[in-house]
Length: 202
Image 1 (cartoon, helix red, strand yellow):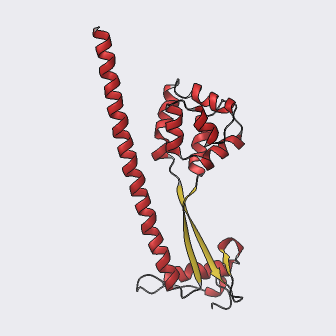
Image 2 (cartoon, rainbow, N blue to C red):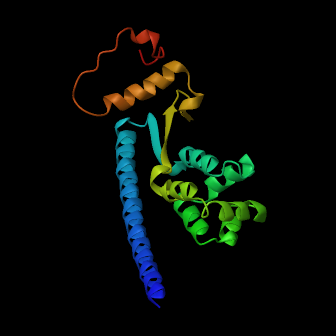
Image 3 (cartoon, rainbow, N blue to C red):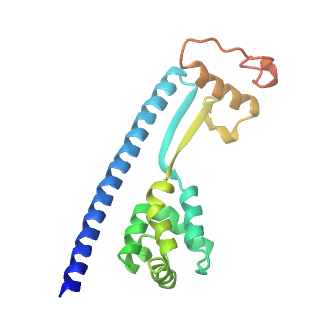
């Protein structure tokens, strides 16, 4: 009877800790989204200040490389293909993944994470049973955050906006110079601008 009371008390403590964890993660997610909104405002202001020469956007939670790296590490030795890990990282957030594994919800991993039944079963059987893997799992939502990705486009003489990857070195430098000149009142000195900027800008 005494042992049952002890176990019940521990179960209650676990539930309380779980609720506190969820509340902290909610606050963390909200703070991260607020940061995204603040950065969006800066991007919009820079777009206006460039007088139509630039278009700056920010894609929320688009960079999932850190998360994918963590998934590769945590599933090492489970014989799950890289393709499935990439699908999981693309379609399921770290927090949703952690919740599904803790609840041993194979259906969630299959439907949201696009995993096969075999892969989902391997994850659910391996992680909760291993203390080190469990620690890594619980750390995913705050150690492997999804990153926001900037999207900068520059308007060429033909009136079309091109992403940085499609620009010449000189045009890339021009785009970054426009951003640098859009804020503050301090002078910027460029030594030999003809080495880095395109002819039209010089």
